[in-house]
Length: 89
Image (cartoon, rainbow, N blue to C red):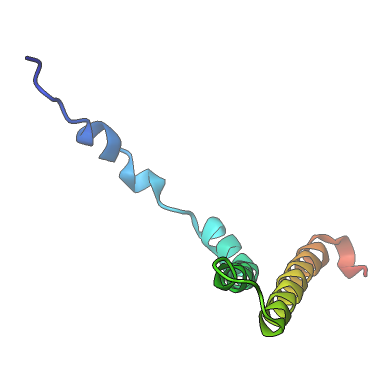
């Protein structure tokens, strides 16, 4: 019978280096409106999984889809504006 050897030391040896950097945390914070809008859209779809969607459900899905798209456009506009040299529009 072979003993079971844990690899915890090998896995946790680099734990200090595996933390997200400030740049990664800032990127997540900038993308948070998109993430939340996508979660809202998923919630709207999940509600209709076990039944036929009503008109109210369809409106909720359309609104959530519009919010998700608007959040993505806003993120792209912020990213594009930040990357333009000289403040050109």
